[in-house]
Image 1 (cartoon, rainbow, N blue to C red):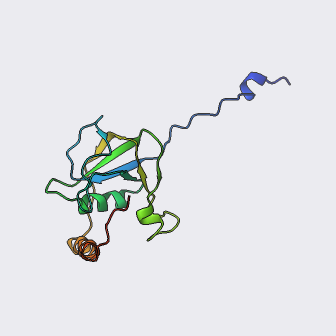
Image 2 (image 1 turned 120 degrees about the vertical axis):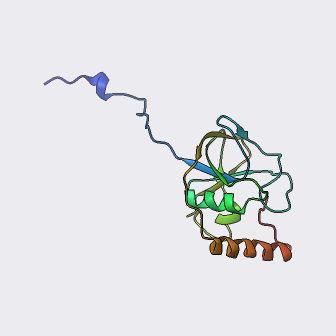
Image 3 (image 1 turned 90 degrees about the horizontal axis):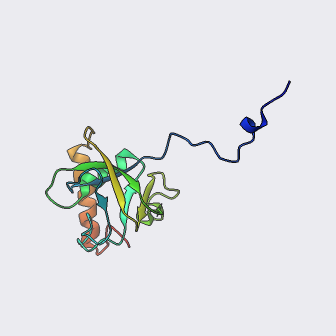
Length: 148
């Protein structure tokens, strides 16, 4: 039986319809297509200009990002698409969670907003208070929440 070799001999890898989903938690009011870029005030720490943009592949980490973000705006979770290289977030992976189980990353390249997650369940007020108290204690000790 003859086979059609052209069907079986392809040097082009099959494209997967699935790609990694990334989230960004914030209080910023963004629109689809907006770019989240470095150089603006950070959501955390001393409100200095951000050298990196943070993203995560877990919804839970994005929820924490939104709940802990500075400012008075509504907590928001965006689906984002990196426009360049990303790296493990050393604020979490090097210090708290070796191996990056939180799937937290950072980038110097813009993140493109592709959607907003409008239905999500935040942490309990008690959990948020414990986390915010911990961040405040670190700040009193002179330890920044974000390390550039």
